[in-house]
Image (cartoon, rainbow, N blue to C red; front, side, top):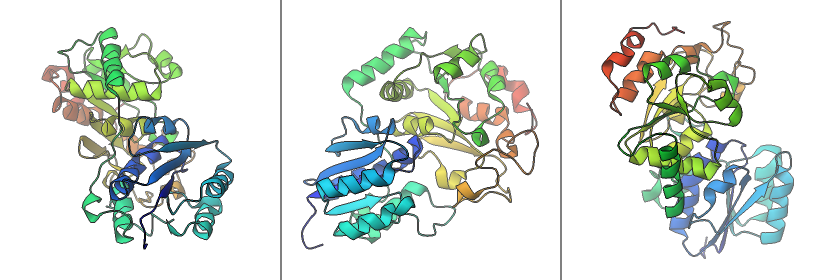
Length: 346
């Protein structure tokens, strides 16, 4: 490219909150390389809110599900970017961008190896295409919070009964997909002896009412990110499966314990602040670079177990508790029985 781009469009329409978080380093690397360019991001709600107050982003454009191609075409027509990068190629999105934009990178997948993290793959390809600096291939996802938001996150923890000196353990039991549901949440919460706080939508919280953990109130996505950040500042930890909220927690600096089953932790792990546990690492049905093609993916029909995803059940609560203990001060006696449990314990 003879002249630096003045308008950059980043398209992430894969549909998941976690997908957008994994693409944030792309946004930041492009801004670092082209700091004077106007940068727009086209994505779905509610993830678009995560870009609020991010100095790398000039404008966020939200589109409704089912109208992705039309939204891309409309943005290309009204704005005419000089450079475009997309994580999404379905429905002819990649070809539409290539036809209009002078410089574009429309395939960030390109037969990836199973042990290369998704974000690292994105950045390496963009560096090879010379649209970002090679020094930025190690950027991690980062969500920008305001000072007021961080203070509000602290207030949520205080109001829930988590004192400033307490290291909270935030549980994120909602998986979003049945194939990622972990069956041992109650055992873990019981072992944590009142140290655990459940995070989730009202329906999730209602299911835990009267259970072995305290409940945090339902909050907006940005306030949830601030709560995760507050837990991180207090030395706490966030525990959950491979989901968007867990990626949000990692992107605001909280320490995480991730429970991985159908997805491979070496490719989808939560990053440098996380410790990831892999269930059934040698499962012959797992497709690390084509997860949506797995026989279990859409309906959680596990070919190994009739009781649900065997890979998730394989992560025993004692294994999770051991990692939590390594991050916060949990009395060893509270989980002795769990630590001795078999991988399939329920």
